Image (cartoon, rainbow, N blue to C red; front, top):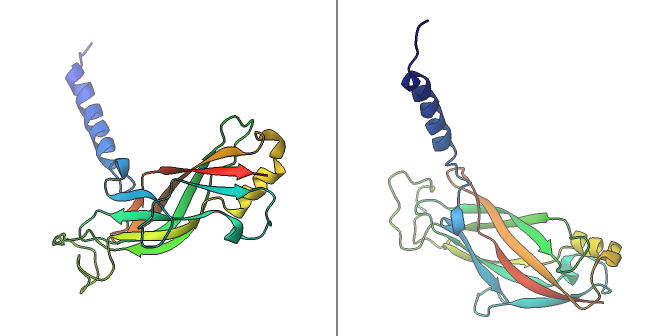
Length: 199
């Protein structure tokens, strides 16, 4: 019987695994917001007043997101030579002590963030000709969002029996997603704000 060395078996396997790992480094990899950073919640579009919490009532009018507590989220592009076109804001919720949790959801978030400030655009830039790192489209933007969209408020009203007695805390965790000018998908890091919910 012909003997086959272990090296002949494992070398191709290791090579295939290495290729698979290299392929995993896609544009969606943005550990801890290194390339695309969410850096907090703000009360105004200038980002001059930070926001650590908000409040809402479950018995307020049930109309559109006008009735939701609102905030501006700060987003920053750290990539030189690429802009980020925003597309979604992503929500997850946690109510301590609740028997059921509101489902995760997302909403449209239109906007563009320019390339990193003061960076020299590399030769392989994906920016349109004439747009540079010091152009009017800055690398930092503040974008207004509803912290608790209408569908989530409706869910909370319909499932009131599973929620703690008011007032209670709603932890709103938010991230944003977008696509770079080179076509890579990125999702920012997540940040959390507390909303006190009353009847």
